[in-house]
Length: 379
Image 1 (tube, rainbow, N blue to C red):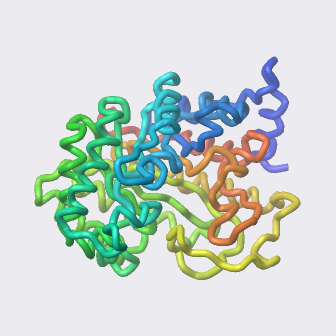
Image 2: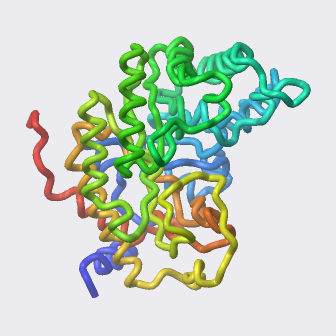
């Protein structure tokens, strides 16, 4: 029995009177390094899922909403906003003294068609779309001004080849939709931290495009606090390599920005294709070979996952002067989006808490990565 499994066995035997495993808290272990958080769904921040809500409170000091602040849910029709789920999300964060993130204002996905169309279904003018953008950002950010501390203003605006994504935002408004979005966001809440968020920036070509975008934003004088690296990684240490993760953090740090790992998970299932894209519209047909762990994750894969997470956190800790936050994209394996993307109905195991809210070997490996530490430059 290796040391990681021994630690798990010991931790599993230490149970509180409530029956909750007395594992260390990630927010405490890394309190001098960076915030540690998770993306939440309504059952968690609404506390109907009592176990997962308790796990969030115990482990994390920052939260991100999976969906409730995306345009399609919070602003589904012209002139109509539905803030009820988002209000619950923000209240949960405030009650538990967490750093609250808003995700996301401007995206090519989960934005209703009406935003880009007139009553005849034709593309609206640049002026109309700019007005709709301003109304949305002002209304959503304005409601939570001073309460939501950081916002993913623009999400996934760069293609794999480094060019700007040919989204309706770009086609109708032009390249300056990016600068304008950040200007509107800063007007709505001058104290909020504003981020650019994207996946696959470990790919040097895409990263170069994102760096060029950031430089244009900086040259335009917009407020940009940091860049979110989504961190949708694979178990295979080549996709991406830890060196690529290291280089990506370093490159954005050179631009004077904070770096957030915003949507961290590690896919242990066989890839449906060779692409490293996290484009949510991608879907593949279900095949038995793509869902091999229905009965549980083999110990050998558990250990690979633990090693992968330990190596990634070692990189995050190396850059802890620049890395402000590490957020897992989900709380437990049960809640992960990877159960249904890019193949629906799979049984996935990408996070560090299992379907029973228990810590996996990967959790203990992350805890172990915190020691020893390289001293900060100021220490």
